[in-house]
Length: 262
Image (cartoon, rainbow, N blue to C red; front, side, top):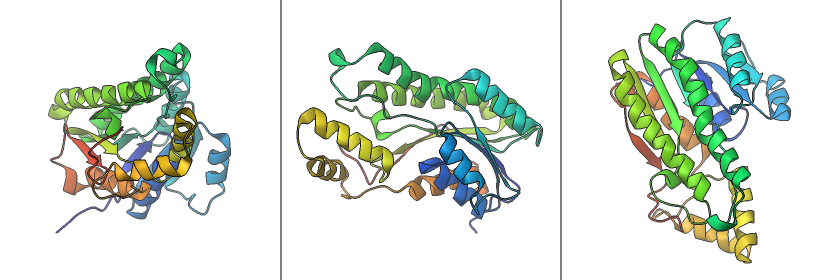
């Protein structure tokens, strides 16, 4: 019998006040988990604090995931409530700039890597001792289809998401003896606000209509479909649950079978 209950599970989610992070928090809460989430966006954080979703099993903090001091303070808050956790979901990420490499700014490259890769290091370093105290658990890193293919006009994003895969594979090898599972999820074309911005920027760069770019993105998958935030949330829930207790070191696309990213 499937056991995807998350009752009594304690889960940490970065960038959890909107998008995939919020969808994942909702699914985990609905399955009985306690969720500790943070987000940089003050408006989203305050809105969530007033939301009916807010209850005794949801804790919301403002935190800049790319700032080690902020992340440390966030974990100090968590440690006041619990000394061990069952899962960490490294969800934070930015789309980065659009353009050919020789025309991109160094600051944009560095910012993309700082948020998409180094923030994962900050969170994971502090989560591992809490997972060890729990005698096992799950780390889920959000990569991308760009982390297993390439992504023309988005080189810093692709580089960062490939780095996430390397980190995932290595951590799975290091932490297996502690019963800590580490996996990467590679979402395809997510229907949401970030993709709206990506489509806008690509259309502007190529001087074509946004509708043409949107249609092209959807056609990259053989299923010719959008991917929804809840699709990622449900996979996260599975990987945290007892049903996923033998899955580790894997790169799992949720992309409708994307065959290209050009």
